[in-house]
Length: 570
Image 1 (cartoon, rainbow, N blue to C red):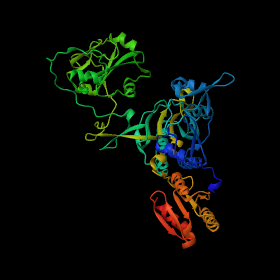
Image 2: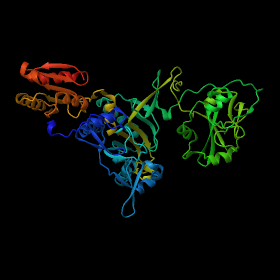
Image 3: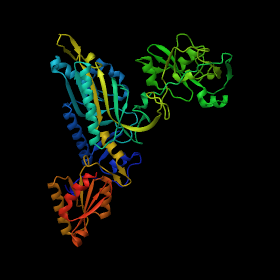
Image 4: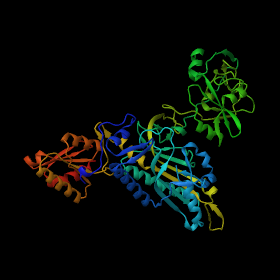
């Protein structure tokens, strides 16, 4: 392939809004172009990389026994209504109406589609197990798409779905996908960390995420320094503190006027105490009842953990009007003392280790100090409700502490069970004649996100450093001299390398050598073969490795051997 006839529009500068390295470099290197917010076109170089990532994923999916299918982007509202996700998915789902007034979803995911298809054709346990996968475009209407391919609205995804007659079958399918994912990310040169996670709107249990530690990541993971506990921060737990064993029964609570002080910072400064001596009372509405959730003043409440602890399907914060009705005080002055009996009080375990703390007084512009749980208010339930932070003790071992890292989510594995098969009627007959819903698993990989993650993991100040397995071209031959003999020999060398099995781009453009070198580094070809004045004067060319800047000077007939040897070190 000749660069003079290849479409690769490189840029000297990236748009100002491209804030991450992958976003900047993929734009500058001519891999992608933005069409609208969060929607990108893949140019020829970018498409070559994307297809190579897909190829690796396909090979490992097939190796694990999964079978490829292709499902439509649009799916009818009826199947989403059966599972309840037509409304539950919220604004992330883009809904469209056709000319006949029928509603469709522009698929954010495909659980409903694949399950309804299987329900039509599979009716016996003899037809199971089945594992189907696709690589397809998805669309999620992100409010603030950013970071290029890492958080787009339209994106490529591999989603696989396993169908089994029982839980044991699901466990086997899950384990096969787990190992397939390990192989995929190893082949993509992505050093992922496998963490515990929550299922979110997809649901399920035994959820695992494959995360790439990166400062550019939008997720946060926590890792124990002593054991194998690794988790997404949204579902992280920490070691439960020991409760206070002795209390000063003579301590009396006291009402203190705190005019206009609604924040922890304001109240703690006014009272002359630290934030960890205050308790926040947060009021929620959960499945038809009001709940008061208590956490230490210096902590943030994790709403997902609160929802799990309550077993609630619906959870929302109480409105200012509801708070005023329930407590008699405006927002910022709620407290557990004297709350109505019908308000369920759930407290974080750290509260049990506190004594003589301050709380809202359920009265405007006032707080109570010298408060103790048990003596001054009841606790209906204890649970881990706080957002875990860097340095918290590990919940799994006695000696470890948790460190916090930014990360990019690349893969997600779910055990769905019968969440979708039951409402969509995917049932099979068992050997005993009983009809049971099929047991499902779901396994996703962000394919286009992997492209960006590879760049985040491999770049320098000059451009991208592609792994050999996914590089758009493995070798660029730079013809530097405006000399017929040099140009001829460069083309002959490019052809010989292609015949030897290398993917080669011949840079024969009428550009200065400096431009060609800069573009070669920017685009990130793993190897550069420089054909210039030394060919005529010494009969040699230069072979350069993009990753480690290793360089060899060899005769043209020795280039293929040099490349093979240098590739072993990459």
